[in-house]
Amino acid sequence: MNERLVIRGGRPLRGSVRASGSKNAALYALAAALLTADPVTLHNVPRIADIAEMAEILRALGATVAIDGAEARIQARELTATSAPVDLVAALRASFLTMGPLLGRLGEASCPPPGGDVIGVRPLDVHLAGFRALGAEVKREGPSWVARAKRLRGARLFLDYPSVLGTVNLLLAAALADGATTIVNAAAEPEVEMAGHMLNAMGARVRGHGGHTIVVEGVPKLHGVDFTVIPDRIEAGTFLLAGAATRGDVTVEGAVAEHLDGLVAKLREAGAEVELREGALRVCAEQPLSAVQVQAVPYPGYATDLQAPMAAMLTQATGVSIIHERVFENRLLYVGELRAMGGRLTTGGQSVLIEGPTPLVGTQVRALDVRAGAAVVIAGLAASGETQIRDVIHIDRGYANLVERLRALGADVERR
Ligand code: EPU
Image 1: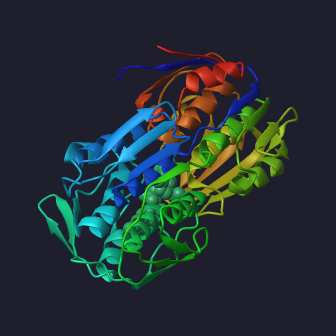
Image 2: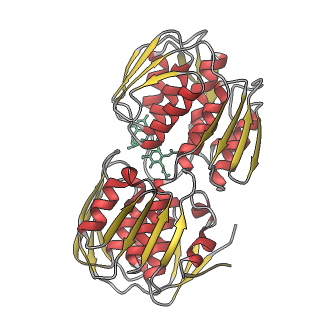
Image 3: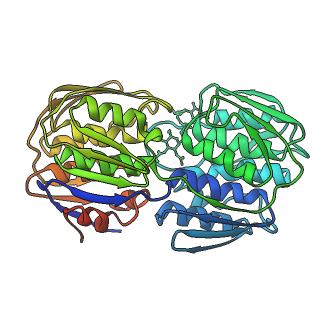
């Protein structure tokens, strides 16, 4: 709990690292496994705290879950509970994804409003309105949201916002509904697309996933599957930004270039060289970087999860950069930590102005959430002296074996 990351920065990162399986996509895959009584085997599952917690939640619902390295074997032969345990839900936003499958399969589901990163209000209206439109009765009972429906009926759903978890929850619910569901203004993130692929591999009839209109023709039953989780574009992007911020040369093996168009464009605009290889991405930033403007928006726009890491890199770019965070209303808290290290950042509303280049200096900072944590790691790698990062637990939620992998790239970093 009290562990720290200690980074002695100022060394360019060089070498290659392999992308892990996607944190968020693996969470959706675990939730999808609840839709069938058959065994589900997942490959390329990242070894991170969020996955362990989701596995605990599935177990509490009656599923068996065995995780061995990057493989997870799940079987929800019989579900014995309709509600995820409160203490587990408090830590993990994706726990709310148990609602869709339980409602679809058992006709009843309940879950308290989930916790997760403190990055904004994070409402649930998209999920709840969707369940209602599919014919469920949804109400608050004590601390929990409860949804009940003898049988869900397909419907045309319009999402007020292309919520990622909202889209996945409704996709999971609609898979076993009677008739066809059309999700309009769906999230198009690659992890949502992958959820659609996985469902189809389980016998579902989903089309349009990866776009903003998804059509799901309900089927009575889904079967087991052996499925490989896509690479983590956010983790890959974090390593690339660390490479650029330290003026290094980093290759991320296994990264999918088409999932990172926004980042690649901004790295190139800032003056870094980016090479797209078959199954790999390489950044080389030996020349000085220059300031850019970035807007974090839903996919395929620049990813909000790479907004804080980008800010850390831009402290090293010449000129005035501006970042607009348009997805979450409170995702600029990392600015205080970067300022403590000497960064010249000013916030106004949901925007941050970054003057660079600034020589960052190591000090004690906190990982306020998983991506704010990534930002201070990048800043620490670029800084002179020693950076001590507290609350490493947040970083562990999203980045597997970070210390070992950064060391392999030449960083001087340890866990203390
Ligand atoms: N929103 C609504 N109504 C809803 C749900 C969301 O208005 O019912 C709004 C939110 O207030 C927010 C925006 O929609 O302004 C985006 O939220 P979204 O629901 O899309 O985010 P999420 O599904 O809760 C997932 C990822 C996040 C990632 C976002 C955006 C998981 C477990 N989480 O969250 O990942 O930032 O999509 O891409 O998949 C992370 O990995 O660090 C992380 C926070």
